[in-house]
Image 1 (tube, rainbow, N blue to C red):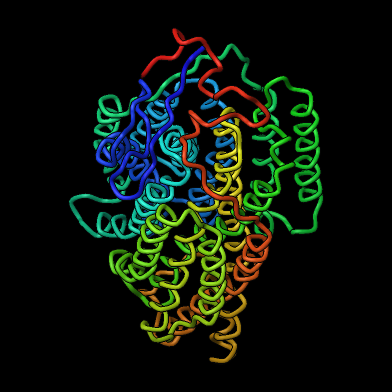
Image 2 (image 1 turned 60 degrees about the vertical axis):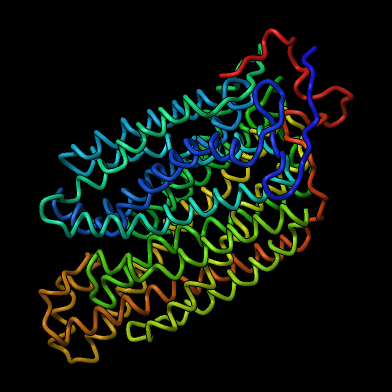
Length: 549
């Protein structure tokens, strides 16, 4: 049987992980091993957000519609969400390093073709491919860390990963704005810019990431993967189209929601009988996993919604350029960066994590509630404080919910459990962007009509010709009185979006309060005893089958 070597876990730069041959790893060795992973994740997450500030120009250049605008964002979130559980399960069966590399290759292919898009349909299809790759990297990053590093030390490195995620999530729109505003580049470079870095990440991963591979002769639950992907896809397609292509209460709504529920029930039935299910239902007997998954749904709504709607607020409510729109969101990225890093360091020293989750929930709820007061003329220093609070809350909750989950599962379920939490976060983001986007479109139209009515009958009649029709206005082409009406409408509409998102953050806070704090383990998942078993996880296969890749 494969032997395991206990790891000496210390704070600071002490030994906190293991190499493929079971020897202890120092902090510099771990950082070297994680360098390619963090670079790959940075590039992939960047690709998801970089189009935010470039979308108005992209859709205009490709002759798209308001529906196309929504779908370019949602398509990537949809495929990322649907693919996440499959990536997590595959990581329990195959080489985690190889899967990370495959995710990067999928991302690169999707990005290159997306930059060559000749119409919105082609672009949306490429965004689906990109989302599959990003979903793999999002799920696998935490799983790879858990295989190397003990939960006690993992808080520190989760903080680093959270900081990378923060920079990529909020920095993407800034970079996208700069690229779009640079005449000799143009929006197509939003898709090309990450490709060389992804290739570098592939090379670095090959040289630095060494993980033991335990080969298991188990079939992948493809039927389960198909059913959950179909259920989630139907649900997200319905949320995206409802209120625009058809009414919320309509036969299309009943058909799609009914189909999603039916596929979901079939998924539960299949998983309950599968020998090695893609999402082991027994995981949800663990109260922490259930509560953390539900709380992640709320975090996803706040995280992705903030990225999408801030760009629209600054460009359409305040008339800023794409580049300045990104610059003005720096308070949020700063808050997320600081709280991710600091919370990870403190958790590593103390082994306590629940206070950070609770504090994050309070700050996130307060930040979104205050952002709900946004108007087009709100002083920027007020907005900066609200964004900083939101960022601080996200940083405290995002990675630590995964950490709390990983600390309570058997090693053989590590990938599935980690991906479940990531899956719900992605699901929350996809549904939040879709549903809140529909809400904003409705509220903006309403506020524009009210504003034009206040200007007089002639202005109201002119408004029905396009400005209030749900299209994306070009503020520079509007007469001063109309421009002020449109800016006020978008300012109020985005404020409404955050106000509607705040109760979900409050729900996440309530859920976190019920999570029981369990002391962080001091051994990496690859060497911790399996639940209900007297053998180590590393003993699942004979020693010859365990190789470093």
